[in-house]
Length: 442
Image 1 (cartoon, helix red, strand yellow):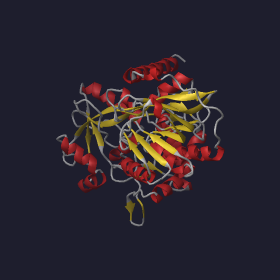
Image 2 (cartoon, rainbow, N blue to C red; image 1 turned 45 degrees about the vertical axis):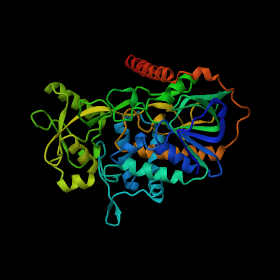
Image 3 (cartoon, rainbow, N blue to C red; image 1 turned 45 degrees about the horizontal axis):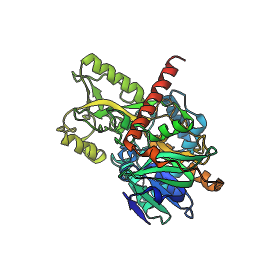
Image 4 (cartoon, rainbow, N blue to C red; image 1 turned 180 degrees about the horizontal axis):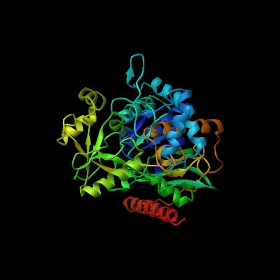
């Protein structure tokens, strides 16, 4: 497979691919693996291929354990989403979960086992243990194995440090992308189909668990082209990230820690909340307690969890806490809420189609209605994979080459890429505020 890293792509070096996928997270990689191998696929990513938010997911991935679990799992998802979820999408996700797990195992993903079977854990908002995991780096385990499989495909090219600046459009049909490289050179990448899998918008926030380069670019481009968005003000705050006064990404303390028994304490080391509440409700309780205590954090105690379980199940959390000066097997650690996940996005149907022809969106970039107003813990990886596969299947089933080419834009329009990035960020933040205000005054 040809892999071009940081290649300079001058305007004269325009190229064509059958399908372009934007993003090397779990959704984009799984989509590429499920697309026909006789199609030329190009994946672009804004940074290194390994620097996607999917790699950061700690907790796990949900699965419908059996038919008896269906009603409970469905209700847990709906309740967490404040019943604003699309019921059809939730049903599709649950019914597809067993198949997705089998596919991941086939691709080499290793989940924790309990004897001959898989081991399940429980997280906030769940009424039962139905979450599969790999230590406390489930996202890294899944995404790295998918990336390895993608790199084995001869029909796939990965372009790293390649930024989507705009989409190419003709008669309401997406015909590819305008892209820029790390040196500021701009070119066009035409394609029969385009799949947006470029994550959320955590980079727009001062305190976030996301990588800083995940800045909602797809939303800004959708606004520019009149592509339908949905629930862009539905932004999830994770209730427990490791408190720090240093700038940069916040280190997430997984939901699974509380699922295994960790408790939240006020400044007097008194428990003040049910730690297994859905994330939005728990976040409100934490903020309220911080205000009462006049403190910038609350305490998280892992004392109820056996030391050997902490070290074996949460080795990376244990290591990071030690680096910050805390032995979480012996003492409380300070935690604070931070921006974590985006439930809104580009509106898609059950096959991940957007309102523009030949343009799909999957993963955190999209809004298929699974999460409603608030995501249930560990549903994100599952949702991303289920609907990424559906996008690939729909493209394969309906594949056709659009007639005519999009008119190539003037490259001068994109000459100042930093200024364009600021414009995109400002437009997304303005749209979030507009949507929030509109909802407030409904």
